[in-house]
Length: 588
Image 1 (cartoon, rainbow, N blue to C red):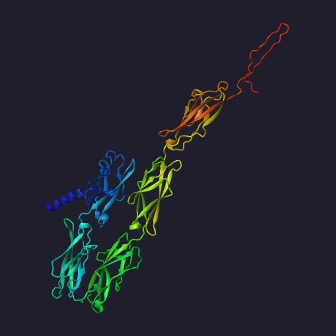
Image 2 (cartoon, rainbow, N blue to C red):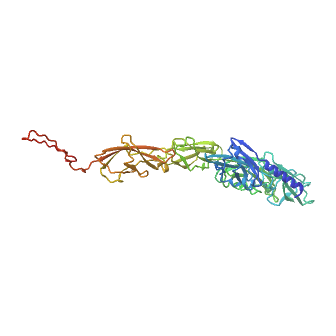
Image 3 (spheres, rainbow, N blue to C red):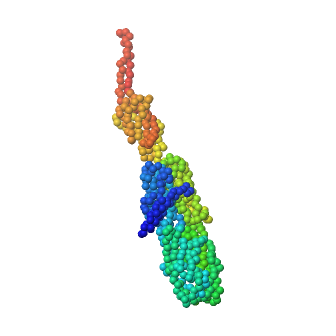
């Protein structure tokens, strides 16, 4: 490489790196960067452009999530800068589309949010025009009229825009010039034009060099050698009624469907005036193979698959050639517009679906992202998204065909731990086409239920003289929550009526077993009461109480007891004695 070429390359690399910029289009950030830049080249500052706090983007897991285009880019979570990760070949990714836009998505968690942006990959002039053959041969009559045109193979240039083929050059000669068709035409093509009559006896073979030049800076070029064999043939060429025909055909039209008829005439007589029509396809365009022309009538019909989504317009080059001993051709163009029909069902894609949604999630809490695509055009590609029969969720249109699934009503895990949300996408075609997707949303528990006892009051009956440490009753509460929110601990609460009870009983905090700490004596205490509190382990914890009444049952554990008698003496002679007996512990 010369010093001048090296200098130009450095300037170009410098220009490529700094050509990127961030703009907002319809609320979305768009960056631009040229293809083939070195890995590590900065594309844009996502943290700055999305107003994210640089200190916590790493903690929140800021990352690129787009499946298709993620391999080309990397995100520095410490600086928030989007970097080129891998070599980007625009010609490979977008072929010859004028715009090469890579849609990307990034997400952050806690809370979950998704950011969409695009990176436009700008073309550089890294491809030269290439002709399909290095040499082409033309057989031209010496009686050809000046102004007669001859089709030439068109070169292919993988670059687009200003870097594609823009001009042609023909090596200096006295017989031929070029007719370059560019303005208003679908492609830049060149045809050989005869400027001066040929004389086979003076020069039977003419060798020309055709050069195709693109519009890059610096420009690139490709060449093809043209061998013109000068021959004696009839002296009139077919003439088309139009140089350019236009027609429309519906996609998916069946084979044999008639599209248009071209017509050419030749004033010669006999076989020199009989015309044969053919389609010229020097570039081996596979879309041209979907059509057929009748060699005698010039009627163009459908031959194969016609698909609007694959190609919305096709350019045909029709040749009319007479049947003379040395036939002479004429050319015209036919522009076929492919009309879209509603033959594609909308596709639903769910991205960034959260694992679970809390049952106390507020309205408009985002659950996931939904993308709807329809390859059709116009109304056939306009899609409406609806939820079928679910009042707890709704979809909101966030950007073009991007939607968010959000909470639309109260959730209750105890009633439904998961929701199957049915989403239907319907286009506006006639008749409309639709597709359905079911999204399962899992609901996580919050501590919104206190433990519940079966009854507000529990009566317990205990025989006196029962064994110390025996279980006199087991309390049990139910909590419909799950996990720690349903793990219950039991506590004794003193009663103001019965006084301290912890000396008489205790409770197992896990099982709810109430055990006696002493043997009860019906003659000393007949009843006492206390409360038991059940508390869950949620944050914050919830609790409820139950009153427990303990009744001591009497047993026959006392013998009769004689109390000292009472008596009186009335005179020595007559002693009337009154004896009183009192019996205790007698059970009839």
